[in-house]
Amino acid sequence: MTGRARVFGDDINTDYIITSRRKRESLDPAYLCQYLFEELDPKFAATVQPGDLIVAGKNFGCGSAMEVAVTAVAGAGIRAVLARSFSRTYFRNAVNNGLLPIECDTSGIREDDQIVIESGAVRNDSSGLVLPAAPLPAVMQQIISAGGLVPYMRMHGDFAL
Image (cartoon, rainbow, N blue to C red; front, side):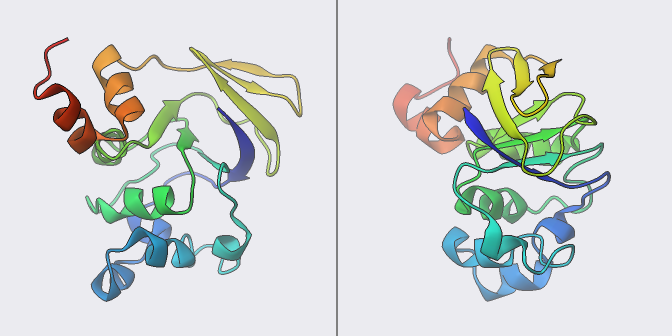
């Protein structure tokens, strides 16, 4: 997977990702992605492109357990979020919805850097840095590859490996 880095800082909570008032308007990812990160950068949603990668510091997705904070990101065509750490709820919601959460040291990644996600590593083609990434259990990789937990269950019927 390759993409352009879209960089945010530490403690990006779910209301920064998509404000809770937007989920009262609609739960449609195509609608929600128009308002992605509007509290932090009102122009972000207009500039995001399918294939972009969210890059953040520590504690990404903290705050409420809004699953819609994952569906809004995925609705914009973003397939992965790289962060130094995730809230556990956001991490699980990401996996369950087919969004790849990657834990790695993101301090050397800058806005618009070209990033390549490889097995076990993140390569920054703009700087030459290669960053080790925390491994995901095989079943989580399979859930993400299937497009999320519901498609995985439709394909497999259970969690037997």
